[in-house]
Image (cartoon, rainbow, N blue to C red; front, side, top):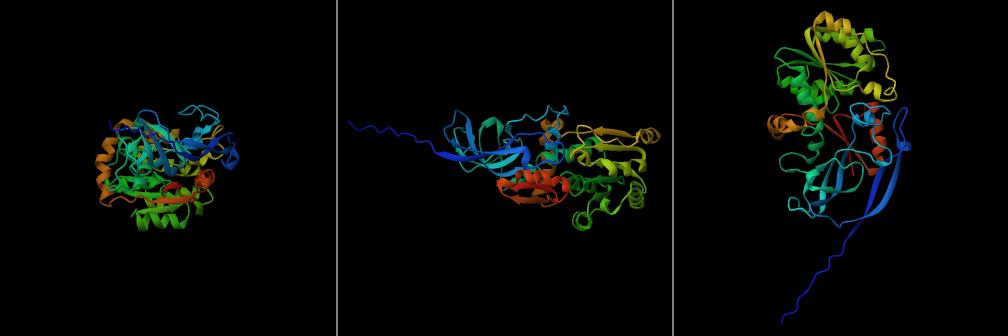
Length: 350
């Protein structure tokens, strides 16, 4: 009789690193609000489980909203767990028929180098159709926010004047480009001459206003008025002084889309600053104002990908990315969002 050989599987261990959210910030978030934990992780997997090694980790303004003590659109981010975040990574080991070693995937696995994920938590990425990082940008949550926020709430029409605050950011830069394709006249508001040049020279916007060059709301409002002559759609990513400046400029039947208020996330979230006195303008102009969240359109992601995916593949949409290198840099990268140093989507390459 022939001898029967039984192969004995020997698990491999990986040195995992995790940023644990430990303390709620009162103001600017930073390293002091996290604990860096290191531990060994085995590649032993349950049925339909996949081991993913992170390659790119997202930092986004919404993370600071979740760190608030009060309920927002979410319960507060729990203390003592891995900081939640979107990730693009590669399969290291798989016990799922749907995923093989080397596959690129996206997941919401957080700030950790390695994660064991059920196959239902992963989306396989086609690295030949688009850069894999686009799953965290134009073909991911920021793209979904921009597309449905503008098209569903903003209702753009050819000839409309669209003003986008935070126009050089991950969402704003996409809203601006979608608005141009919809036939709008698009004016971006951003901080600094370099960002304003990017908006006009690279993205082809009709005008850009540098809010940092204005010390008062009145001065900023005059500058916006000079290049718009009135606003049909205001896509707001920042709130604060910029929104104070824009609201009195809205036209009849204007649409105001509230996507974010990053000016208040950095210390004024639990006790927000007073809002602009805009209700009279809403009345006079019979305008509408609508808040939008990416999660409201998750089930309709296919609609956006069907339209925007081919644009990305043909290079007709610029998905600007800023990279910071190093797993250790994650807390600092999140903090840097509130300095406005990034162009487009900010990613940490690990």
